[in-house]
Image (cartoon, rainbow, N blue to C red; front, side, top):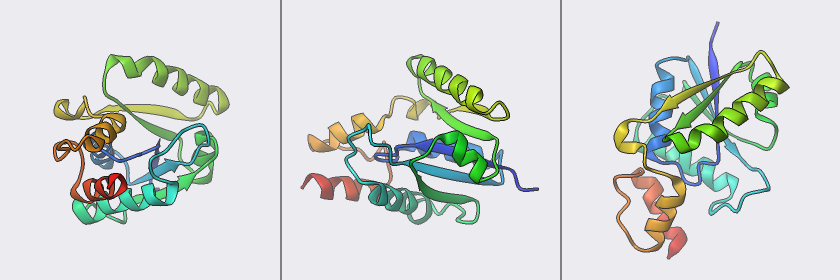
Length: 164
């Protein structure tokens, strides 16, 4: 039986921190569903279709990760409903710092209350990527800073085009 996990997020844009979580999860699961949120309560730089395309280019073009093991999809539902749809009982979440933990802990608890068969697995990115956030990457590129250490070539290209 294939074991899959759902990795939900905004990925606005995808960073090396997100990619670390994906790479680590590929060692644990047969399939990773990278679920790109299209929630209405956020002001996204890129719309959901653009973010999906950016994620796919980063993972498959820049990094040459296995397309058979990663699926990139949009979603607007509860993550627990997504788990049911894709027959997964694992939600992956990345942790960067202690400051992330309180929010993630509450979110995991709420998901568990919604469906008690779902487990949340927290993965930390490598130390050099723990300080990276999409928010900071956008701010740096907006101010013409160098973001090569934070994300992939195709993502940098998309960000630069957005701010030109």
